[in-house]
Image (cartoon, rainbow, N blue to C red):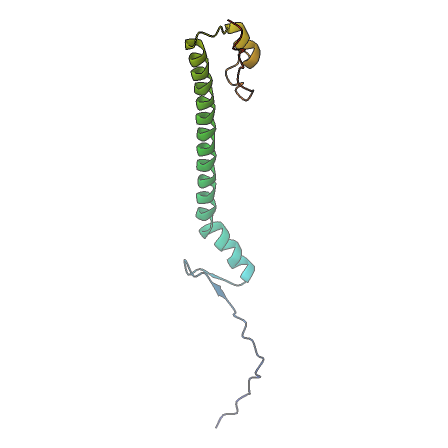
Length: 117
């Protein structure tokens, strides 16, 4: 009968090689396997996240442009309603309130004195 060396209960087996679960490559160090996994297999994950981020940025920009357009549309509609009610609105008054730049839409709406005809 062969003499067997007893293995202690707190014995931890340390692998001599580290195998990639995705492509079966073998590395001597755990750090080498980690670098391989990051550069070869998680690279697609990073690229997908980057593309998703760019898509969300484009979507946000689209929403901002739509909001600016709708604000301008509201201003034009207000101006049209007030003009159709025969309140005198001079273009110079409108420009002095909102400026010549149509992007300047965050200012308060143009108020008209109803007593002024």
